[in-house]
Amino acid sequence: MAQLERRIAQGRGDEAADLVLRGGRVFDVVTGDMLEGDVAICGDTIVGTCAPYEGREVIDVSGLILVPGFIDTHLHIESSLVTPLEFDRCVTPRGVTTAICDPHEIANVIGAEGVRYFQEASGHTLMDIRVQLSSCVPSTHMETAGAELTADDLAGLRGHPAGIGLAEFMNYPGVIHRDAGAMAKLALFEGAHVDGHCPLLAGRDLNAYIAAGIRTEHEATSAEEAREKLVKGMRVLIREGSVSKDLHALQPLLTERTSAYMCLCTDDRNPLDIAEHGHLDYMIRTLIALGTPPLAAYRAATLSAAEAFGLKDRGQIAPGKRADIVALPSLEDCRAVLVLAGGRVADAAAFAMREEVAAVGRASVKAPRVSAESFADRSNRAETHVIGIREGQILTDHLLEQVEPVDGDKCPDPARDLVRIAVVERHGKTGNIACGFVKGFGLKSGAIASTVCHDHHNIACVGVDYADMALAANRLGEIEGGFVVAHGGAVLAELALPVAGLMSLAPFEEVEARLRELRGAARSLGVTLEEPFLQLAFLALPVIPALKITDRGMVDVERFEVIG
Image (tube, rainbow, N blue to C red; front, side, top):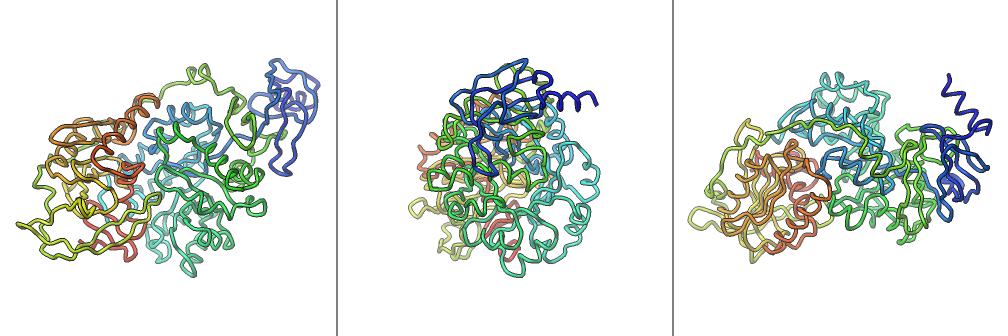
């Protein structure tokens, strides 16, 4: 009652506000108007705008434009390769004040413990981390994950203050064909928020998927696909990650008319990309540079995102809203000079005051030691299924190439850009090793390997030399997971990710530096992809068409079956 009365009193000007932002202009994401006047804040809530206010503390924002804090509507913080607290320190100063995350990467390794880790971390960050409950652990029956989350497991995780609903339902065949496990999870969240994941789904199959109560979609890769999903009632989240880059394709669809039903997300973005380009701030300025009206871009990043996820307390600089505010020199450039998250200035002092959260998922790499012979392909048929990479997308092509066996092995052929890809089960369950071919890396020699391998997070390895592949894969076990580049019997570069084989315990600046070394090492082997490590990770995700690989073999995603 006392806090309620304080908010009212400070909003009316009967007592000084806790904090006043003075001298700036507020960009209203409803009308598009520039509003004059102070912004008064009581605790974590905006209590006054468009009027002069006195404050116990006053921050001069003269010459700056104030916009609401940005909301990333779908991401996996694990893919930033740092812990939730380091992710907070990395992106909150760029204006991201709410992150709606799906911890299914760590959940696939250590199960419910990983979800609880994120729930606990959400109570210690400056930004507001909302933790969706992972719907598909494992994502399909065609892989070996470290854990499983059933409907009963999810029921036990419900009710946390950071929760909104059920995270992306990747098993779209399970939905439209009424798989019992999928139905149990959807029934548990009937009437609540459920995130979607249905790449290329259309027509009656799309109708059936949406009829299950699924509300959002971040997998649209063309304006035509996104438009069908919009008109059928889904909120379309424009994605621009380190690998999945859909912004340019979907930008023409984002207008002032559609922006109420479109949002922005990053899905998977690492600290190197964030350092070089940015996060949601990069998406906003790129959209505007491509011709999107500023009102549409900022509305999608703020108010539309809040409305899509039922977060009625944010998304606009207005009385009664959470004090998530970003100060910018210009709308077009979108480079934050001041960020408030819940009324707190996101500066070094605020980050230093946070409590640490104990790491989980240590020593999670339990893979068998492998040898060069582990990566031979003993098939005797020349016709070969090959994963064709589409750079900038996680969709792949299903190619057929002729690869003649030589001495009982179908060898990599770097001259044709046909190199070995392998997945080694690393959770200590089966010891499976599956081998195949991939085209699109440009690799000429050596090998790269990773325990970031969506979504099961086994060891993924690509290479020309089998001995280097074995060296890289075995090294991952020694460093508790991460990335390794090997050549000529030596490790050229590596990044240890000891938290479930997914996240570093180092500051994000150090992770960024290691990623630069890894990128340089990969390029020295001929790799032409801008982001080879996350691109490799998505080659093992059997819910994205058309051809993928897991520890159980090559997967035809369109037929939803292992083909060898």
